[in-house]
Each structure stands twice: as C-alpha cells, then as structure tokens.
Image 1: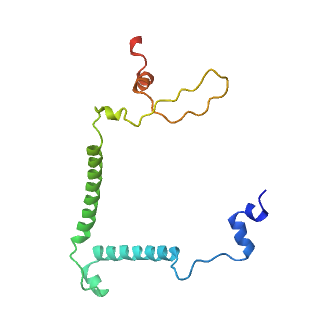
Image 2 (image 1 turned 60 degrees about the horizontal axis):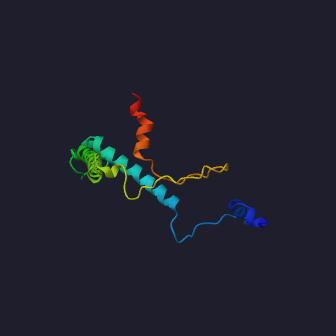
Length: 151
C-alpha cells in the first residue's frame, strides 16, 4: 500500500509546504522572455506600419529622418510570400521525386511486409488482438471491387 504522501498529487504536496517553489533567480523566466518578445513584435509591427503608411512630413515631425525607400514596404512582404510559396512547391516536388513511381511494385509490398498471424480457431477462447500486419493486395481488391467473376 502506498504511503499517504506518495498517494497525493504534486499540487497537494506543494501546498503542504506553505509556499510555491520559485524559479532559479539566476536564470531568466520564460514568461518574461515571452512578454518582452510579444511587446517587441507589436512595436516592430507598429514601426513598419508607420513607415509604410505615414506621409514623409509626419515622419520628419516624429524625428525619423533616415529610412529606406518606400517601395521596400511592398517588396519585402511580397518577396517573403513568393519565397514561402516556392518553398512549398519545392518541398512537394522533392517528395514526388523521392517517392517510387505509382507503377512500381515497391508501393504494394517490400521486405518489411508481414503476413497476418494465423490464430488458432479451434479453441473457444477469445482471440487475442492480432499483431500489426499488412493486408494483401488481393484482399484489398476483393473488399473494394468484389469478386470480378460474379459479373
């Protein structure tokens, strides 16, 4: 039988001590990094939108005197979108190149294929769960298309 302390959940054992354990102060907290990262992302997005949409006199009034040409406000996002689309196309193309052809017999069976284990049906005991095995192509065709000689 388990002891009373071992049967309790970790949350209950923490509350017995009276206070929650704190993180090591020498290491930064992941919550702080997440908060700072989210604030930095919002600030960067706001700066980008201000640079992209505010007129030039307003930027000078805000003290921004040096910035890149405005056409990069459209060029960089469109470049990133095109690069992402090309990456997806290249990924799919490499999968098609690495896969065997649909007419190849390796798509039906290979050296790792396992035949279903024969379970003794002569006993009246319950059958155990059968091991994972491959289903033969003849059984698949029979299940999908039925017996061709019955037409």
